[in-house]
Length: 148
Image 1 (cartoon, rainbow, N blue to C red):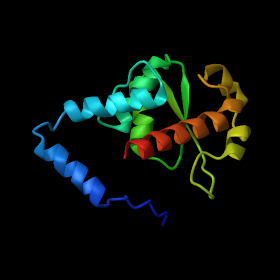
Image 2 (image 1 turned 45 degrees about the horizontal axis):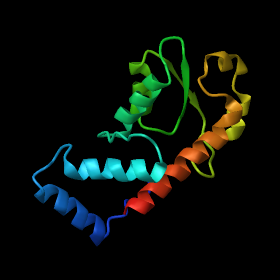
Image 3 (image 1 turned 30 degrees about the vertical axis):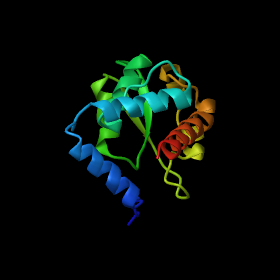
Image 4 (image 1 turned 90 degrees about the vertical axis):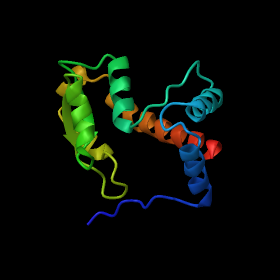
């Protein structure tokens, strides 16, 4: 069995969730707007939009990048069905690539071995995948750490 990472729920997290529930705003409200403002300031971008899930965020990104019918999107084989479903929602085709046993992320070795005829349909060049994913993960981690 592949273990999932347990959530980190300490008193600070419990206090924030309790404050949100007692605020009277269960959906987008002042706390969400403050979160968006802090992310915008931290990242130095013009605006930030908080969404309810990774799936919603990924669909927005795929559509923003113009992914649609005729495109192929690389996803790991070790994932939730939402990763493939969101690609299908845009009209694109999910292409599953095996994972690395060391970190359960898309295997760089497997990426290099897949059919490079797919490259003409990709929105991101294969040589940029390593740097792109590291940048995204690093940015997300820094934003979360600084906001807590």
